[in-house]
Length: 517
Image (tube, rainbow, N blue to C red; front, top):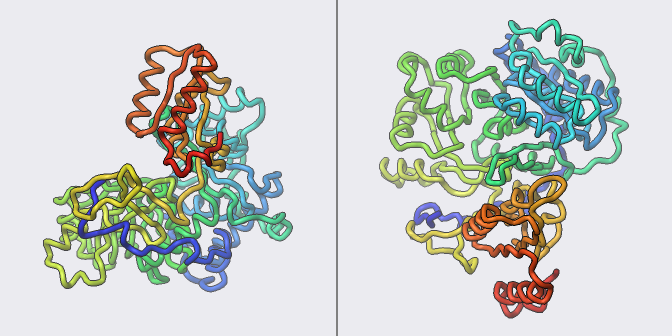
């Protein structure tokens, strides 16, 4: 990445964890909204044509949490959500927050085999299933039950009022509507054992270079921090109407569940995105703010309906997920007549890393200069510190030409991948790694180890090496600028010599005596 001469990430003062006090978890966000905005409309669900106030949302989320508690779910247990956008997703999220359960967010477009892997790896014991997209999940469930030897309870969610689950599947689980409609007391909420803001709340499986999805854990603290940051950055308020057009199983949109609720704004959900439906919703529901994928913006601005839709309620629209072309940005600004920006993010940061929001001094810039800024990756998100550094970890010149590695820090950055706790929590300098292991190949976690805080050296010791394994290992090492040694039946003296050589060649002289092995 090149250092940007106009947006200077490493020089911008961003808030740090010490600057922000987080004394409540995600459940308290809904609890406060129900206290301060009880009669305000919380959500309009266009899938089942329902409207709910914050008092009603709180009541149904509480009932669902109590039902989950009665079913034996406790702090730290995982539940999966395989649903399109709906008010039900919000109820599930807040009910899980109340009990400090772990939400496993499932992409409804995944194949059965992919869902099977995530369900097994996450240890989810219950799954909320959208009846309109259930076939792959039902197939995955059968495989999970067979392999695990224990049940995986299903809760049927009717996202679209016109779609019901097949009759032969109706006996496989519970009806969501019945779970939230009963007059249960807040059992489990008052008797819940002591919880922590650092308890894992969201679990996302991201694709990557390892061949298998990596589980990213986001705590209550991280999710709340991110909500507070987006409220400030996007100037969210109680008059805002958020259009949930992007999928709520993805961080491109799910953060708004908490951010909009925090300020008592209104949510409007549509089950699945289409440009025409999105445009109709924006006008009819007076949507004022939304965040969508870059491809969605392109589809919207090229839809014939844009010439007849009233965008007067829209004050802010952002996009992310991939770079946006200058032509699309220009067309979006011209059509919508509102503030428009591009954001860049990662699941590992709970979403946003940078945003191309124009500075307060934008009036001093020419229209061309303003467009140039909007089309960049922007400056760091409120709670994120970004540095672009050279190989010596020194900041590169902010001249728009110098390149370097990006280092990201801040209170919304995750602590590490689930399953690599030892590497994440302990400052190892060297990791000895085998290729053939009982739970998979060591090659699959090379890139994950490279991302560990201590950036350890990895020495592969195996009796099963081949040319392909060596090529994969060395390519990973060269790309990441860290050494990987492939040692096959190496005598012990030679092995020790290799280790010592690695230690002293890669460590500054002042730190050589502080290495940990």
